[in-house]
Image (cartoon, rainbow, N blue to C red; front, side, top):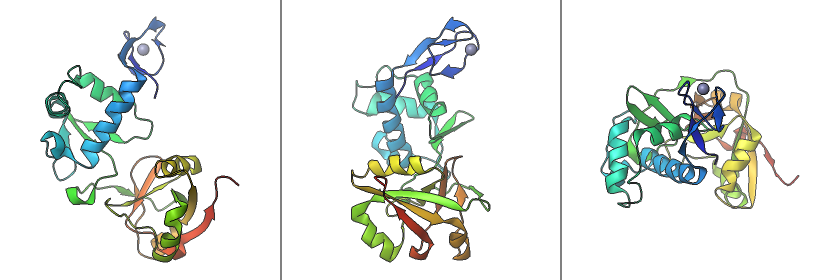
Length: 219
Ligand SMILES: [Zn+2]
C-alpha cells in the first residue's frame, strides 16, 4: 500500500507527499499501513476479543479503546507507536471502504464473522443487475451444486467490478474463477441485495440458478 500523509495546511489525509502546495507530513508508511489495516480488519470483523474489546450490536468500538487495546494487548511492543491518527488515516483512506468512522467510534463496514452477532442496517439495492463473486476452481463444483453460502461470515460478498472480484479470489488461491451473478434472480428468489459500500453488495445466499456464467480470468 502507499504511504499516507497529512496536509500541513488543510489537514486532509492524502497519498501524495505534497498538498496545498506544501510538503505533507508522513503519517504512516505503506508497509505499516498494510499491517495495521489487516489487524484492524481482523479485530473489527472477526475477533475483537483478541485484544479484550467488545463491540455493540452494530459493530461499533470506541477509537481510543481500539488504539489502547492494540498498543497494550496485541503483541506488546509491536504497536507502542500507535496513535488515534494512524487508525483514522488507515480507516478513512481505505480503498475499499472497509471501515466506517463516526462520533469517536469505528466499525468494519461489512465482512463480520457470523458468531459476533453484529447486525448492521444496510440500504437495499433495487437497481443493480450484474454482480460478481471471485472464488477458487476447487470450490466451483460445490458452488454450482449448492450455491454460494456465507460460510463463517454473515453474508455472501458480491462486487460490482470484475477486477475487484478477481482480487478477492486471489486471496483464496491462485487457480481462480469469477462467477457472474444475476441480481434480479436473487430478488425473485427472495434474497435482498444490500449496499455495503459503493463497490460491495451483500446477500444472504446465492442459489445456483442465479449464477449466470463462470468467467475464467485467463480467457
Ligand atoms: Zn491540503
